[in-house]
Length: 92
Image (cartoon, rainbow, N blue to C red; front, side, top):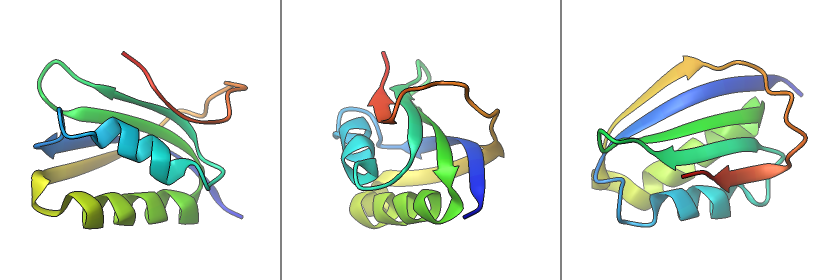
């Protein structure tokens, strides 16, 4: 299974609506690892590592769930993580 590492920035109405908790909840049934956090400029940053199919499924579910709240979703290749943490976690 192909693995990927991405940094994804979400803008729109993504703070104060449970976006980070929903990311963690949706990722629970996957093999994804990484972090999700609010940025000072109002965006949310998701740094995610794992199977490409799981990342794409997570993004699709977030898009369906938050719909018009999302204005933009910008993705860039991320750096592989040496973290032993499992799952997605919220950082502050």
